[in-house]
Length: 198
Image 1: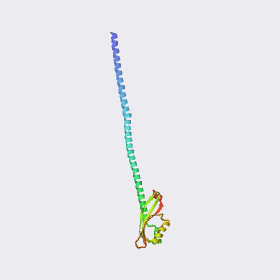
Image 2: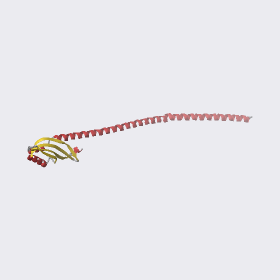
Image 3: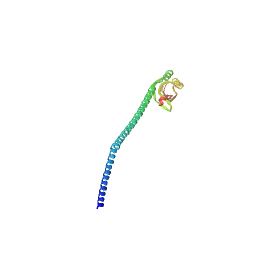
Image 4: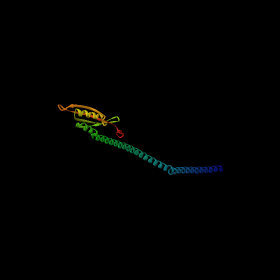
């Protein structure tokens, strides 16, 4: 009987120990959960928020970089267009300057007219031509002169240092008159200046 009572007391003690151990285990589990929760909310969660903010900032900077790249490309295109317009304006001004210069009758040609005593019917500048590095300025001339005056005029042109060639020449008589009508194109050839090449 005493032995049975001893076993009963031992069983109750073990049961109490098991219950106490279970309480300790649950307490440890709850403590671990609490520690993990604190670790998440105090360390991991702020880092996630910070990382999300960094990602947003990186995306904003990437968007800004794309916009700046587009803007830079537009600026380059505008600069190229500006340079092209500037070149076109320079070319136009040079062409106009050459055209205005071509409208002027060279003084040396006026002297030849006077010395030869020919009658100038018309003189018309021909549009300038560029052949390689050469600029060709020409004049279409119509004159009225007798045989000797015409010969002197042509001879004087051929000796002139200001005119390099006679491109065309046609002579027609004026019926019973001793005068002849001459139609000719004379040219002056010069080297293009560097700014004209450009």
